[in-house]
Length: 524
Image (cartoon, rainbow, N blue to C red; front, side, top):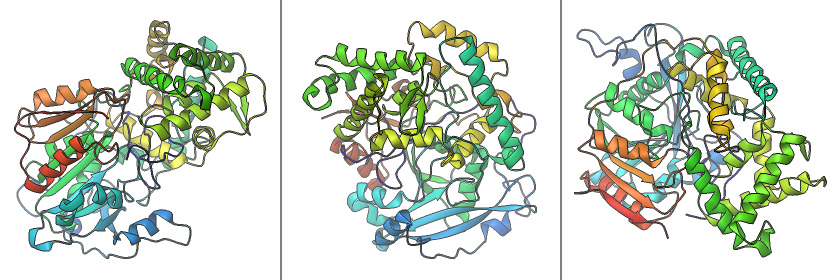
């Protein structure tokens, strides 16, 4: 699995390789709320206010939407069927406006030993998961026959009721630039994105939150006629799993969280502090590229390859680089590099090396048609083709927690960290639309003190750092942690192809018994 091909992907939510595969990272928002809805809507004594949703009958149909629907065809070939679940837009007004949440399902083929449904979330926030059951079912090997594997596009994502702010980009993330004038430009950019969301999706924004997504998952559980669900969540999906298990105690069976987010650090500035891990990942890739200088021509030593990346950064800061119809400036170039680092295998490394070669040629003034990976990233960042993705991602991040509102906070942090890391710090410390967002309606979830879950993380994960997995493991004494050592990899189970990891997860899914102790695995 270490050689699945990646497509162009968003800066914080690298998609899983393959047509519908996305891993993800979660960025979100940081503090207060005004009103608090009940933690488990409908959990109080008396009539169930959500009865019409819990008791709805699902209509399962073909997943294929048309002749060009690759995801639908993959699902159909794997035996999946699709359905829409109706949920309230506003859980404090269950009799009001409704929206739909899209599901796909591959049913268990060993009904005599059926465990139940395994609900998936591939990350984001904003990542589509409906297309994931085929490859997850494959990763599960024999134990997959005992589960209904269910992909859920969360509210406002993919085939669910959409939220689209009509942005000119698929991502809110930019680098701060080289000086105060550059920072002021990205501040105006972030403010404009927030205003577009108010204009085009203002009625939906207050309801785009992880807590509401967790409430939707519980409606899905009830609509499937299940008492409990098992759950596999990657990256941001780990946070969603933590929130669901807290809001709906007793309704989870087997829980696997891969790329683990520390809920104490979840917020709009979650990337703060990941500079070192991204630098290590860049250095690891540079060593790989140096060993293949005859192919990529970026340098014969790690230092020479890193110097080539620095030349590109400085060139973009002086004047935008021309690549096809795109212009890559000081705000975009670091995001492109950040995008190239999350998957630790030859194909992803080769794509990134080809992209850096394109950027080097553009820095020398040559006419360049970007290679497929780079073209995908530039289309994502510099056009509105995936506006809905960035819109939903940002709405959830900003809806979960409030961000600092004073631009001076971000400018101070960028200046303080730039000398240490002039490439990544201006991305991870920078301002975003959450600084200009309306305050969240609810307080963030205080995640449950313990959960018997199986946690998975690579030590070099540049998105959800290993420290987050260790923090969750220390608080959840009944959990167990599988550590993949020696890989700068985001998302491991079924993605990276290490039998030590995959076999341990599958054993847990088969038996429901966690390993007796934490498990250490070595990258190949």
